[in-house]
Length: 317
Image (cartoon, rainbow, N blue to C red):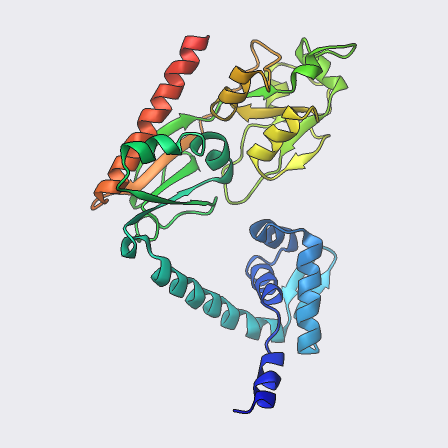
């Protein structure tokens, strides 16, 4: 094939980002959900779809308000891309499969990774230098039973089929804020004072069970005069915590994720009785049978760390 022909063929291949945006939107039939999955804005998804439609010379979606549906061309294109991305993922799994490189594949939610696991992981490495941990931050259901992931941590009720699930951490929450918000004319001293401060929210995700929110917190305290919906929203707990630490408002955060910040004084819990309990928790998942020795060792270490953290919290009361 001549260079000119090679260029001609390459020019017919649309940009990868446009293909990814279309595949996600076509699978979910929802621009916002596709944007959440790819960690971009809905506007970016729409722009990439327009780029692909320009390549096609025809629309790929019927649009009516916020509702979208595949056109005939879109419906023909979607399964090809779905299968194509699946093959690419399988190829990546083959190349980077941990068991080919003597590594342990660990999948955890992003905020759990940054606020709880990352500050502790060096202790596991020191105790088990022979185990190389490959950690990924993901909220989607992990393929533990299929072997793509050795150990996973997920937020939910613990009722995961085909795997061994053990409770790791409670997910009870409490309001937290920067120390500066407890000083001055509008100082936070009692729950009613929240009317004078921004409430930081965690945006619901279809990838996880719902988390305790401000509406539930106010209801538990009989407060009806404060708008429980106003305020900035974040799609990750860690981002909400960081916003609170920088004085942007008050966030509801799991005790387990803010223990270090509370101990250092970076954050404060302004209300002594601010806790809100939930039946949901963080669970560690491994294969029901046949889990590798490194996987069992890592799961056991996680439970030891969680118990030590819980015991330390009780001692601080």
